[in-house]
Image (tube, rainbow, N blue to C red):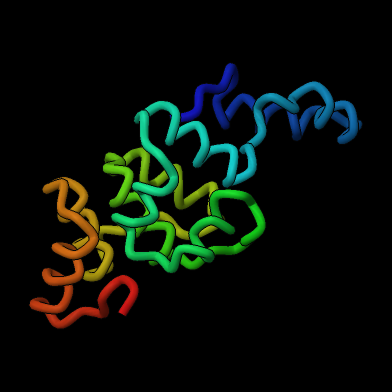
Length: 144
């Protein structure tokens, strides 16, 4: 999970009080969300994983996945990001951050599909096991 010096509330206060947006942006550059490819690289390093191993475990088409990791794919789909999260063994908190970096909505427990995904993350299921669970429960699979 990324570490920042200021919390979101502090940034809101500064933004609303500063009359010069350029000054605010310059002063808070380190507080902004990094590109998805940077966050993925930091997760790989933190968890001592290789791209190749993650891609193989994810079930995401190889070239597409490499484009996500390199930053060439700017708006990867939510299921593909979730498949990568499962393949990296991310916690729920890490997965929620990854979804934000990918500009996707976080998992929401009031949504049945999302509830199954949350449960699968907590159970440390693989992509394949999660797809089987989704199928058994009559929901759409990840990469169907």
